[in-house]
Image (cartoon, rainbow over all chains, first blue to last red; front, side, top):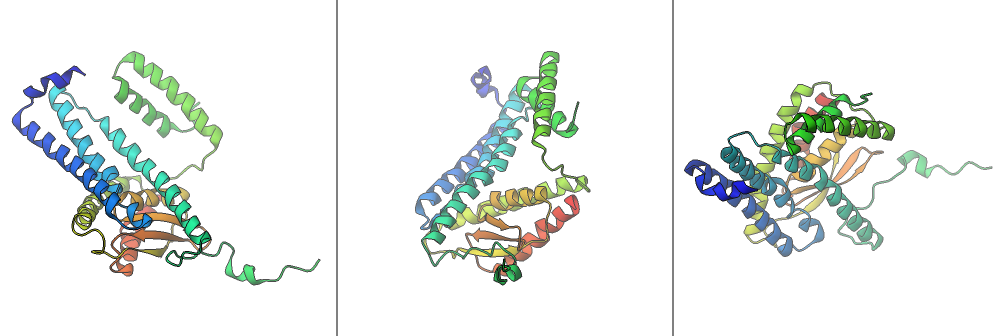
Length: 132
Length: 158
């Protein structure tokens, strides 16, 4: 996109706002990634990248919206779509990974993981099968 | 012709936002939206009913604010120590919500808030297993989820 060549035309207040949100977004994503390598257990590690998928993405999207809205002097908001789709799809992968880990830990009998809740109603599970 | 008018309208809007507001793109977007809503109809998903849709912006506002707050909380946990400066753990939360769409929204809210992850929902006991990074007081989290999000979702969807 050729607008990037006109970045010098950006007024100072907009440049400040854009850099502020860029640094916030990139910083949060970086902290999340550092946490990803430092946290000791799998279940703790799944929390770290959510920094990048929430306000990490949010900050960068915000910076992009301000940058292109000010430069092209019209409202550019379709970046919001990125935010919406990232937010809506993250839980899918997170749940897949976490439940796979839960399943494996339960199969291995890891005592630190809560046991599976009963799948059948408590009353019915204990009833003997009807004689045939 | 249009089984999901809201879906079709948002698809047209999205198409225009991505490709530019011109007559040609509008026509193309309408064709895509109609075809997509037919595809959606053949999947026969449960049609969610929004009773109090005007509460949705309130929910979005609350969630964005909470995500911002927990971003700061989790970032400070990760930066200070990381290893043993916090106590993480599993907890179960009993839920009164039954609407599948509302549960999906709650799952997105809980998961996209850093520090809490929605692991598995048990539809029989109507409980959900959540992993919390900084589990100081279980009851506090339970009250937060039930009063801050679930109550509002119940109003919107049920």
